[in-house]
Image 1 (cartoon, one colour):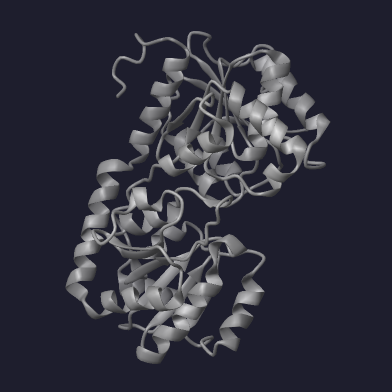
Image 2 (spheres, helix red, strand yellow):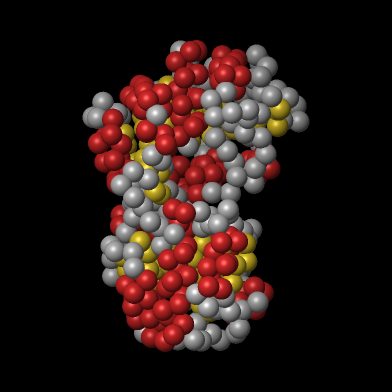
Length: 402
């Protein structure tokens, strides 16, 4: 077990902080680049830490967000990973809970939900909040031990926080009304006031100036369905050879996607810049943002951060109607929702936006308004703080929260 704390105070009996403040122990499976990890960081960043004494346990060592969390002044411990279900990690987490004595244990990601649920059951310490931020993958439901553990954890949790209503409905369908499910939408920060211009961003990334750009972003994994995006490129390029395309992100499918672009004879039209630091800052170079996620009945993402980030940057969107996307983006008001994921349908809507600058700009403006009104990081943290106090039966302290 490796401690990420200069004072190595995480496991000491006399943990710093006042006992009058509720103690929250956060448990997360990993802190690599990803939507859940970013939302977790935003929650920690905006949480009122004068009112809460919080610590973080990551069920893995290393990761993109670790240094950023440390820079917030939050104690963090990383547990060495030795397997899918590691008794030593469970024992270490139980020990941390016994010594920190949290009022609330709040977990993110399915793996972390299981560890946090079992550790609080062993120690009988703290109220338990678990998270449901994407559809449970089939492998977590097919094995009897996984079904058993998930039913126990979700059933005994004091609250299960979903990031959209679609996931809440799916969770109740799987585990019944005994699950105490509620919805807290993802949050987002406003972009920095000083930004490079659209053309300056395009030049920095190596694109041709004064030519339209259609982009997408996300991990290069099967569920994101970027092969469909390349099929869309092939269709649009026959009609508008001046359009440039970009796929921001990295992952195990990068090589095969690049090969597929060569096969479809569009490699010259699409750029793969890899995983860019703070990808959102590059979004203003896009004229249209596209998401091709292929959610199935039992898997997929819930509430995609990348669509929120595109909307924040006032970009018209053409996105898959998957998970909670329809709750985020009203169809034909701030973009287009695609029911049937075909390259022909996507291409038709993308071309209509490229041909109509007035419509594109109006949809982008409305997208920005929706995000600013409903999905701020401040609103997200406020709802979490209200949940914490409601579980602790401390309504008097929660006075100003809404």
